[in-house]
Image (tube, rainbow, N blue to C red; front, top):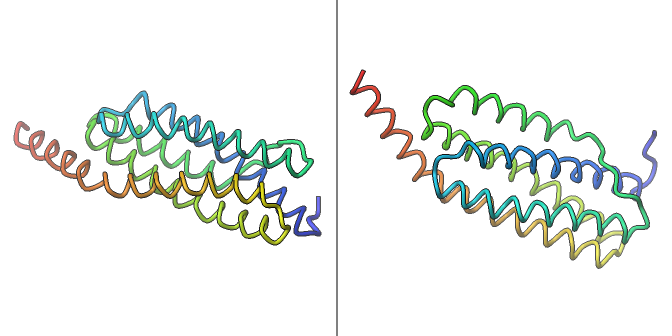
Length: 172
């Protein structure tokens, strides 16, 4: 279907991030089972709840626009999930290294979602959709906070990964 209006593009992009959030929720649930760091487990538990709320917010956005909530296959999200899954399989023998890979994957996801929400907010503002803007800004704020937490946690998890690497090479 050809996209000919801002509103059509907006609905398409909304369906895209709606699909992305579903894909990322499923990936987070898998990572939660594999994480060995209590910090990451706690972070994932919190963000899983936030992602579930973000999906509900997106459903409210569709409703506010008089549209049915429909997922548009998000290839970007699929690529990030595929890449993250592959990396977790390849690091599975070293839990600390897997935790670091997990945080790297989370950082990529957050940095994918943030500009997606920023673009949607700009579109909603142009369409003068105040409730839509509010809901999207709520999602954006959560994504930005998660990105900051991930960035702040990376050095600590990297240290653990490096320590485990040294101890495993010393015992070899």
